[in-house]
View 1 (tube, rainbow, N blue to C red):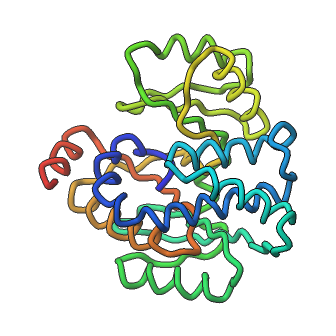
View 2 (view 1 turned 45 degrees about the horizontal axis):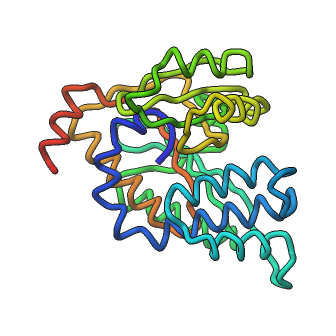
Length: 253
């Protein structure tokens, strides 16, 4: 799951990460293949590939797997890579908006699976455009909080690199940029010696909806089901979890 409440739900995500390790690796590898196909195998000239590799390494994908994925995507291994990016729109429990981003080699399979998963888990599909207008495409850089890096340090590093805002998400910070400035902002952080977890284009909601604990549990269940699909790369949503609700969810663990 990407977008708002990312840091608030870190504990929830970690609870299921072990059982999804293989699926997670497969999706990260897919991103690398697509980036290499679009921009070539040379990391120095392909910033999208740099970000895809960085994210894979942060998730402990073996270097051999990464290297093979780059060669596959760039056509250097004789294998063919052909994926389509498709966006589906829908609503979760209590009207929570969802954008489901798929990266698939079979559009019909992906559409049928997303529709089935939505229906079985309390969601409904929406017409194209009826949800997407609530989201804007942004460059999003995620940074884990550490003792040595403050919000002011991050602001100082990215202010002249096109950053729009730095958001304190509790367990970490998010730097938002125009997608065209993502590479510049990421480079500025590296030059300032600030480590980041991921840097990629995401769909960020313009208006968040606060949810109660019951709704949050239902939304988590739906998003978990969607993310368990091989074809689903990302799920973006507009729900926000207040601190008291997060405390109640933590007590479930």
